[in-house]
Length: 462
Image (cartoon, rainbow, N blue to C red; front, side):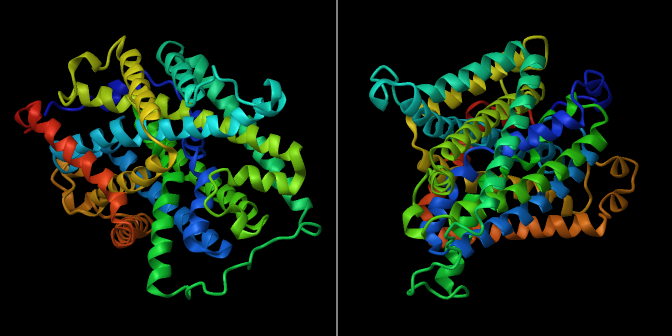
């Protein structure tokens, strides 16, 4: 495999600082999942308390993952994410599979899911306030709004990089303000609204029963998709000022803020209505807002969710294509996408095209089912490389002191172990609970292996 670019030369073209990086992390995390997953989780778990426990556990796992990825970014500065780390520390084939996952699921699938959620929450606003007879017109076809959102930011990030990065930062700020207003309004209703924190079916299985633990694991795996963007900054590390400092900081800061926000939001989402009224509903956030503040608060939360999912689309279109350019530089992807004057244009448009195809061919529930497991396994394997002996690419290893290179600080070591263990544990439990959800994951990995063999990538690896 060709050597990866020298980090010094890459950093000379740095464009982004800590603020933009943190916004990228927040934008990538606050997308479709937080506004849709709890309805499905409540249907499986049967209890608002258990849903909140699942979100809290998911947050702890994500924070541990952010700490581990921060160390990976410090050791191996450069864009490319999982592909970059696994190619250097395990084998080019493993890195290729990680890049393939990024292409088909990590970014394209997540962009499609965010865009579809954007449409689901925003179109009803126009049905209420704009369209005649409050009905979606026939010319506005299903998924057309999602496609327009993807193509708009695809073209923007391909040809107007800096202006659209600024637009993205502004959207993140407005989104966070709207969500803060929603939480403030919810807080004012603590004394007057009827909350349903303890409402659970009488026949609900005990928390420590096997069935409950397996269901909890499945929900955590779904919820992990909402936290998946915690590592977003590593994909553009080559374009960051002081990447060895700013990338880890942006991961910790962004993930910590989003975890607190997620728990507070879901406390409102799952407790503001009787569980049976929102279980299995993908628009749980809008239902919650309407019960708390009527049409005006529902409008606010729909706008906030629209901005949230839109910024998620923008953030992933901004970060994902850098992986493909890195792969092309190393001979693992067609040379047409190599880093250069036109590489961003081409990779962004490729990413947008694949995401658009998924929007037109998949449902929201289908995307949620296979994305969560696929991305979690890929990230866990990446973090696992921190715990392997003799990290061959660390500067200390190159100087003959490989053992010293792997003496991780206690916090980083414990975080990495916890992230890996919890991710694989929930995946194994999910196999027992819903084996069909792993079918999409298996198809992605098998397809990636076949592409590797068919294109002869194994011959250029060394």
